[in-house]
Amino acid sequence: MPFRMTRVHHAFVLGLLLLAALALQGCLAMVWLGAVGVDMSRTSEIEFQPFENTWVVEPQERQQLGVVKSIAVMPFVGDPAMAERWTVVLREMTDLRIESPADAAQVDYVLNGNVASQEPTKTFVGMKESSSRRLYLLVTDSGTLIWKTELPYTIEQGAKNLDEEAVTKALLTHVRAHAEAIGFAELGMGRQRLASRALRN
Image 1 (spheres, one colour):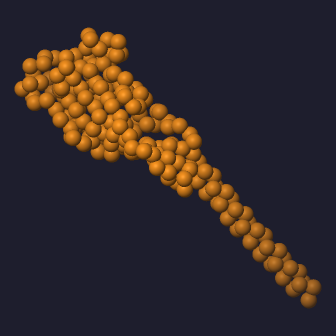
Image 2 (tube, helix red, strand yellow; image 1 turned 180 degrees about the vertical axis):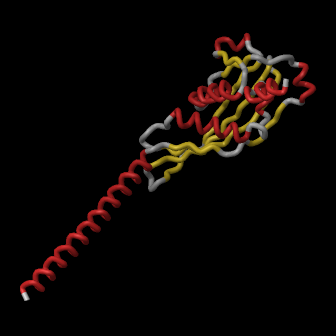
């Protein structure tokens, strides 16, 4: 009889330990989910939408402008950080020489940007602000319009600022995905095209 009682007692203790372990795991999971939720509520995010209203100068007009080798990225109105991001995009995707605004008079192209934004709205149970924005881009050559496009995007602003490196990578990926649709090749021959030409020759 004492042996049976001991086995029952041990089974009871093991059951309690198992329940405690499960409860502890549940608590840890809740703590983890809570930490993830807090981090998501603090982190700022950006989402790019497809380009709109793109226009590129006709090829015959483009030929009259001659060889294009350089471009100056002017400060963008409404979002200065966007100018720096597009400078990286141009360096990565074209063979154009990128100059500072101070040298704009000595370059072939000038890139101007203007950001318009709507009133922000509360999101994530009021812990974030969401702002819809639209970037207007114009490339000119001595005052002549060469290329234009519009880039809608949304910023969800939390307590943490945007990770600039991550935003620039996301923008670069986005432009690469839409490069053909927006006529990006008109801004300068890309490295990949140069490499493919070299292989053919």
